[in-house]
Amino acid sequence: MTQSTFSRTVTGVAIAQVATPAALDVVAAVAGLRIYVTRIILTSPAAGTIQFFEGTGPTAITGAMNIGVNGSLVLVASEGQPLIQTAVQGNKLTITSVGAGAGANGVIYYYYDT
Image (cartoon, rainbow, N blue to C red):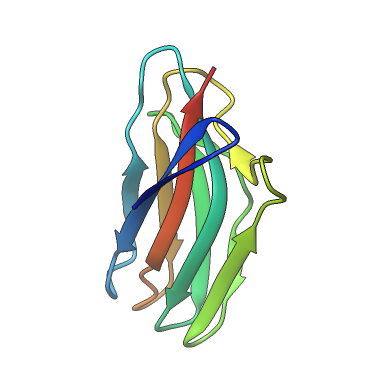
């Protein structure tokens, strides 16, 4: 799932944790580039939290966001603006879900830039 916007190639990556909460590497690191997330569309079959991290530390990018039973998290940035981004060039993006049976499922759209 790729598309071009503002001279950037935006790529969508499927998230499929099913019902197994854990850390999941979502976007691979690219040397010298940051990851910019423009859209987040996630659901969870059970109540829990979803949080984004960067790097191998890992370092939190967001706080833990609550999702209810069969709930969803839909965030769309203004055109050309990211919702979240990695602070350090060359870091990967990871999502972690916590809660009994609260795996995150959906899609995240992102692009790489300096």
